[in-house]
Image (tube, rainbow, N blue to C red; front, side, top):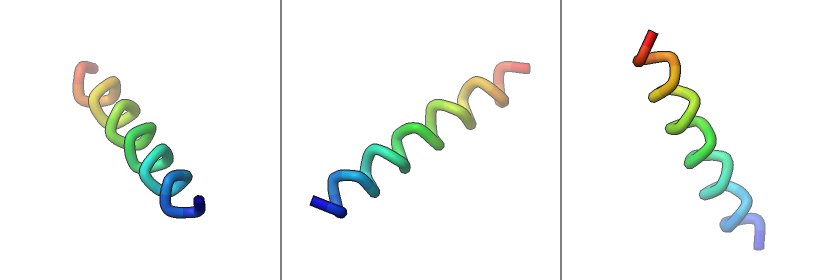
Length: 23
């Protein structure tokens, strides 16, 4: 299950990066 959490964290980071890229 820790693997799934890692994937979620990576996805969240990607989304955050996209938001920052917009600015």
